[in-house]
Amino acid sequence: MRRLIAFVVVLALLGFGTSRAIDWWNFNVNTPVSTTSHSVTFHVDPGETPSQIGTDLYDLRLIRSTIAFDLYTRLTDAAPRFQAGAFLLNTNMSMSQIVTALQHGRPDEKTITFPEGFPLRYQAQLVDSKKLGTISGADYLSAAKDPALAGSYNFLPVQASGDFPYEGYLFPDTYLVDPSAGAKGLVKAQLDQFAAVFSADWKAQISQSTSARPREDIRSIVILASMVDREANNKTATDRGNVCSVYYNRLRQNIPLGVDATLLYLLGRLTPEPTADELKRDSPYNTRIHAGLPPGPISNPGKAALAACINPPVTNYLFYFTDKQGTTHFETNQADFDSDIKKYGVSGS
Image (cartoon, rainbow, N blue to C red; front, side, top):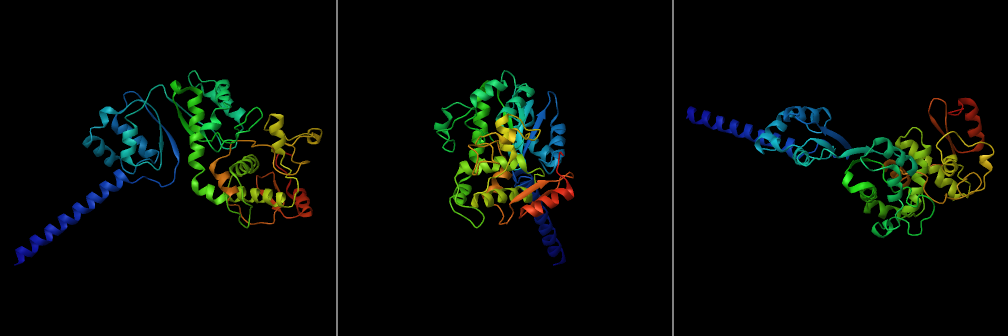
């Protein structure tokens, strides 16, 4: 009887160990490191071993275990099929998806990261500086104003005008650039990403008014977010939300927005601040003298700014400024605004 009991215990332990091992394997192979989407540029150099690749992936927090990676690549015989080149991976990819992606690289592909809140002309300058094969900044600008795009993307304005009719929709992110696809391929990738980010859920949200904002359309949200990304110096969720609440509060009371970044956009620069003479310029982009939104977006906003304008906090703020230490102050009235500026000073002054 004692031998039978011991045998049963050993079998139970083996079963428990096997179960734990299977759980560990499935967790490492099929569960992404993060549920949050974050693009990561990854390079595989010619001659790099699978072990080195696994270590690099682990260091970038794209996989949990180099041991699991080594075992998986051996069992699937994937290692000999790894390609040298640039890859655009994501923290929400499972290890099995990453291994598959690494088998389809091209050595002539390059990556480019567009920062949040940059106007199209500055994105074009970045394209030039990255030397993306035969793709030039001029090619990029030309592709980004192709009128045929409006027929392919229903969020683009059909009657857009100006030098950059689709400003605001060229989504800032990291992209893998295929030179054979040219500038049109890069622009398409950015518009596709905007379509993915501005989800059906967001569209449903903006179709309903809230206590903080009225019912909106995509165009208005993009214009507001484009100003937020130029004005919210700290780039925190709280500051972005508060800045957008100022805009909604001013629009509600028909007070000019007073966003100097809109005038700078017209003037074709990011800095320095407008001069006294420039502030007198009569243009709908001069939101110091014209109430309401400017004619169009003044930058290409990121996801955080768009989200801040879709779900802004309820505040009574009507003013904001950034002090010399980089802290953004929000005020409900002119007197407190003037007082705090004297007390803390203004960034750049």
